Length: 281
Image (cartoon, rainbow, N blue to C red):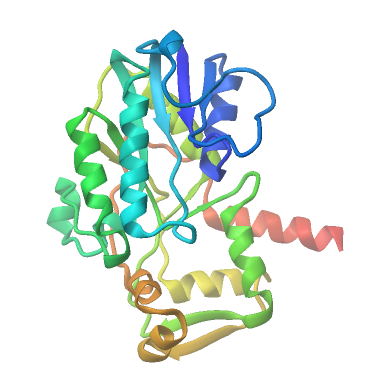
């Protein structure tokens, strides 16, 4: 199986890449811009006639970071990237695009079930990218609020940021967040690459969900944060902005795809990590 992965140096992408290699796939990496020359072979950039229409599986885990690009620029860069990746795919290739649950931030339960996009403001323009990707036969995998585990764990970065300031939570805490381990994502991508049937989109998440306050309590319970700062929605918005408040209020009862069978859970991860950290002190 010949596989091309964009964003292979990112948090999710590096774990997807590693898993496919471990399963014996012939993995190539696509990098949009080479700031430094990558080590090793099997790196592609831009158009490459030698590898045109030769990949069985094409996976996009890349996304321009919001701190470096405007929302308008992100749309242009992402759509250009997907168009470039299309040139590498075989006519019946499996094409997987990674996106996020925030694209359903304003969705009703019925809209969520149908996959109707109703994004929060900060990702509103991404709707165009998803619609174009679906029209070009990409399958979209929607990741949950927080991805954790593995190398460069997103959860650990968040905890590190909160060690000094504490964990701020807006009350009443009405949001509902979902979680997934990065290694479960990688295994699911491989599962999709191996199947003959396909569908337009997939939600993946662990069954257990937590409100922002419940999540903060969980972190405190396992000694990962020292204090929770309870503030009003107004104060939260003043401190962190409208986009952060929209995420804090995000309440989506996700029904994960039946094919997704996670091997990890957030509470076990926190309890195991807590014991490991305590033992090492």
